[in-house]
Amino acid sequence: MRKIIRAKNKKLMVAIIFFICFYLYLSNNWIENTRYNISSDKIDTPIKIVHLSDLHGKQFGKGNKKLIKNIMKESPAIIVFTGDLIDADRNTNIKESAQFLEQLSQFAPVYYIRGNHEYNSSKYQELMNYLHEIHGRFYILDGDYQKIKLKGYTFNILGLDRNKKGVMEKFLAEKGYRIILNHYSENFLENENLSRFDVDLVLTGHAHGGQWRLPIIGGVYSPGQGFDPKYYEGIHEGNGSIQVISRGLGNSIFPFRIFNRPEVITIIIE
Image 1 (tube, rainbow, N blue to C red):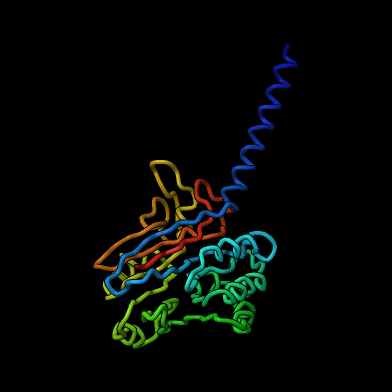
Image 2 (image 1 turned 90 degrees about the vertical axis):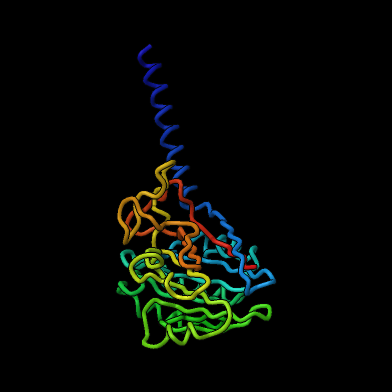
């Protein structure tokens, strides 16, 4: 009788371990598509933007084919990437991560800023060499901005991975829809308080969706904010501006996401 109970207990333990491993795999590899509709009196025709962040060198299938397929089905007008393309601790998939952006740029213009992991990586220059070799519609916004036309509407996209003297003033003087790309989600309503500027949309990452998103509690921990973070996902509003925070795609020091699948955001401005 005891042998039978022990055998059943072993089977139960194996089943539990299998379930946990399977769940962790899904939580970290099953991409979630999030969509936000943002209204604007500056835009009459819907314009679609895909927002990506915090890949940390992760691969979704060989050559990131699964991730690329997921993004392309959204048919975006432009794609933005708000930092941490690679991971400074592991320093893996440097070339592959650059190639991922290059492949995206064949389908739609890609606007990229660096995050703390690019700057802190010992492979920083290697990464930048690969990025500068990209042949396609790929733009590194190094504390500056680009003015573009989408469906006849003027968009100004400013990348604030670092500040350059006088750039913000020029950017704010431009007519049209203004977008700021900044890696740090806490910079919208706190720290640099980007919401104080006359901008329409601020796109950020860095917070990893709180890493673990527990029922009722929400996000548990985010880089730069610590435990019980305020700004780890979703839409936030302040002074007439809107911030969209990406939960990101990969992981850094802690290897697992819980109730927090990798995220591809599609923003429809209309």
